[in-house]
Length: 424
Image (cartoon, rainbow, N blue to C red; front, side, top):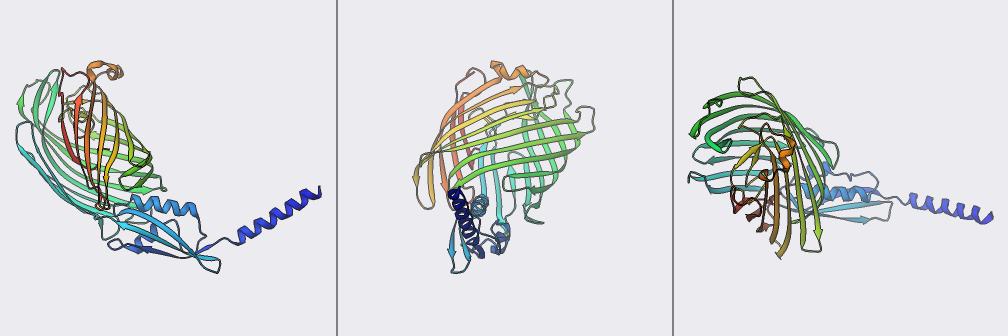
């Protein structure tokens, strides 16, 4: 009994010593912030002057900083004073954030096409994205984008987008197609709220006008050759982000849920609902490997129309399948790849990758069983290269070659896909 009492007294004594030695943050010093507003970054941090030193908050700060477009790497050091206080030194390596966008391709009608853009991802040094693009693909398109996640406070921001987009798109009538000029003129305003480090929601309205003009191909008496539609889109995007970054490597889980409701008044289309969820999972494999996965599942109102919202496309879901080769009212896609770094220096990294892209679709007006029909299932596998400039935000040039491994008699047997940024 005496031993138990003695042990209890010793425990209380030890606990009081531990708690009495709790260090207070006397100062937070930021190093390496040249183009980024240092006072702005300090306001974002969980570690604040005058608060108790907390190693969990320090780790959160590193995750937060490494997610910013302006920061390629971040670390910290704690210097203890003789008193019960300390100074936290946070060191960042900045990215170059004024990024040009250049894409060149050839359309199905052999039109030389290009897209030129310029975006600043750290405007005024406050994590603001501002930029725009001009595109020519036989028609003129442009877009202007503004996004300030911390415009009003640490957790509240705003995004404003305007776009005038034109493209020649195929519409499918059974086994036959017609080409239409599609024009979308939109104005969008979104509120941005970050609940915490992992959870965020974007919500707002998009007012847009859609125009369809018949160009060539088959005609159908039930499908008008010219459409001019005014629409409104209510949208919300909920993100759960538990990813960690180390230069070109990513690890963890992320989920993005998109919910949209389109309001329209016309005799051809009804109001419709669309929702899809992207799940991401990344795993570091030893020192140089990275296994990456994206699973997308989405459904929309099941209207029997050639204007179905889910597209089967090279640049969106299946590498090698072709450009806008089909549409549906439901989509299931799994992209998986293994990335391996073969060259890694201070400013440049080169990765090889091996991938498989699998997709299945629900036909407009079809049933959920469409997902399991062989004719609606496509699988492409292939290899690729990544050239990564480690000091420039999102400066990854990628090239992939995908080859069909299923249903090779129907559709594209394979092809090259180029782009900026990782595919997912």
